[in-house]
Image (cartoon, rainbow, N blue to C red):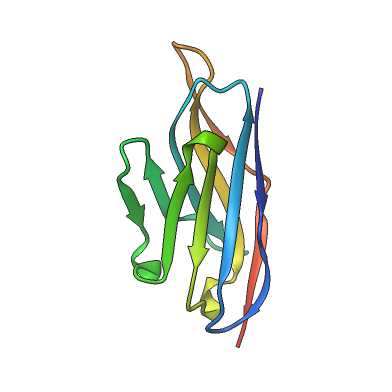
Length: 120
């Protein structure tokens, strides 16, 4: 069994910064990709940033230049540094990971989500 535990959400004023963390634990052989998605009520969940094992990162256009995704492989942890936050960044941010727990199977996992609220 694998668990993703997020931390770092909260309330911040526009222009401020937050850093989200997501730690994977459990039966892990390797992590193929880790990333962050966000969702606001009434809207579809959207990709914020995703980092694959080769080091390539994908970002939503709306966060380019403001958010940075990084990973500590030794800790099985992914981070999302969010700078110059805007009220429209307000959402529940969820960690997502493709984790190999056996040599034959890769499974997609979600964290429980953490609320980020940006006040104007």
